[in-house]
Image (cartoon, rainbow over all chains, first blue to last red; front, side, top):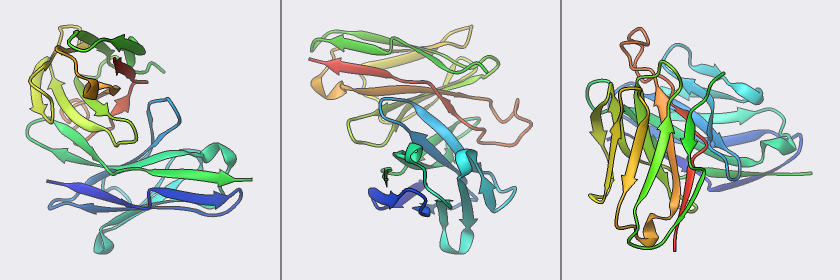
Length: 116
Length: 119
């Protein structure tokens, strides 16, 4: 089974500082990887996804992630944090369990706090 | 753009009662997934449907059942509710690889969730 590990359950940065959220995956086949963001009491919003087209993936709100096969990593970055980025971030891997089914397996999440 | 609709948004039930959660996928999406997110937890896959047939099953209790109807909406039925069932239940929809041109693992779009509280 595929899995993802998010290093750091809580990351705190200052406004304007670099954001780096770490995600490592385990997969026996080329993975499909996703980053979702969850604001308090809201649903999951897709930030970006990797589907093997390009190793550097750009998403919404200035976020990007780089797929590194040698390191089995898919870290999320943003050059300059904004107060509105404060949220929980989930890394997920898509696993084909037969036919057309691609269930998501999520990491434990990283809570991002942005300090003024 | 149309999004995934879930109803109700909030639900309060007593132990041993039943609950029905509804999900309306994005138009032309043929696959529906259900996830459960406990307090402070990551979402856990429950069950999925493709073209009205169950396609995969995760950590879903036998007390829960679900189905997808001819209009592609889905319902999650939960019986003999327990305190531990209190959670946020998400529905997600996507386009199957066939409709997506064979790309595989198309994006799952999540609804806002139903927050179930069991007292």
